Amino acid sequence: MMGAAQVRTIKPRLESDLCFKVHELVTGVMAFWLLQINQKPVTATAKLIYAENCVAEGMLGAYGIKQINPLTDQRSYTPVRSLNCWFDIHRKDEGPALSILPSQDMGGTKPGDHTSEFRNIWWDPGLFFGFGKNLGSSDCLINPADFHEFGFDSFQDVVFGGYSCKEDIFIDWLFRLAPRFTVHFKNFWIGIEAEWMRAMYGCVGQKAKVFDTHPVDNFRFLAAWYYFF
Image (cartoon, rainbow, N blue to C red; front, side):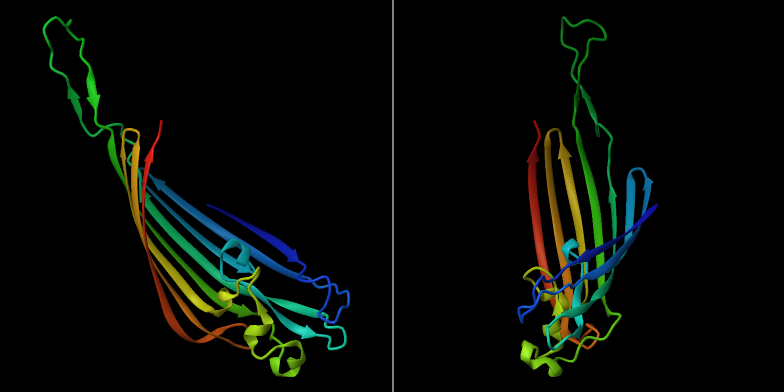
């Protein structure tokens, strides 16, 4: 069992849309708790994460505008928070062989001079489950109707998801379920995984929370073959 926390500050802009030099910062906190139980051949791992503006880590997150100076367009921001968790359980069979097939004692061999053929085949099934929930921002966002001159028409215009992707800000919650199965045979590995993900998309509200949601499902199947030499 372990836990950790970090504080990260980013600088969204160096210059405002009105060509003023601005000093803008967004500070977010991320903390996690990890628990692993290892009872061979089964290993179970769980992780709980509280995150603020952690879209760079692949979690739900963003930051929104809470104040604007209309003369200089300098802005102050509030991070959008999320709660994320995942659980993984898998079985790893480390036995070297399922059976031993001794070769027949042919004529001319010495007593005890036998070789054994190992069929190194074992199976590793596993299951992954993940869940993420948008908690919104702690501060209210600006009213877009008061700042039409900056091109704001709705709350989604004053929330930024990071980089060039803003789809995360429309998600209220999502989960992922992914069973997998791996077969090992000597130097060969064959693995398959099926994944079902559901995300609840909707409209962004005053505190960056999402309402009027509807589900969007995604299915994925992955197969892989490895040869080690």
